[in-house]
Length: 258
Image (cartoon, rainbow, N blue to C red; front, side, top):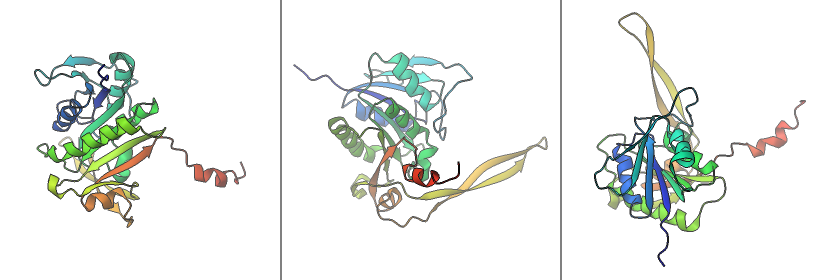
């Protein structure tokens, strides 16, 4: 009797036609039965946003002719995509949710802004093992081929080993040829931040507007961080928990006069 293939939900934040998600779908089709539910337009940096004051639309589409997977484009955010997939579109609970491959880094503090990772976190909140994948290359012609080996390895291990309760994985892949990637490092999120700036301009009607810019500041010199791993040619794997309670602070706050 043949073993039933795992059901894999694929999503992203760059949009359903982005090259990154097409590569991820290709790899997932070698592992399980794939259903894609992804935004119909780019939704980068949406974080964990959901649609509550507007309608949501989902359309069954076929991006690649003769491809085996079912695909749905969704008018909402990455988290909307996961919610509607689980509650409306799938006939059973997925064995795994994978999100990406994102065009650009989701390491360090970027994880909290990332639509890619928020989709994975949303799946994790309902007990679905989930992984977000990102490549450190923002160009639309980014080479995703070196990522395939590591994505396949991480997914197969996740399906075989499972994940601890309340944890999803944040996987970032350096922009390097396959021969230059040294391996995988399981590490912590670097203590870094963005130093934001706003470029203030005036439109032809005299109204001021702003473009958000900034500089990424990493003062964390630890060699056990995602930023160190990526800078030194490794794929970084950070276990991310979505219980945001600062457990270590409870004792101190309990000393307050409240």
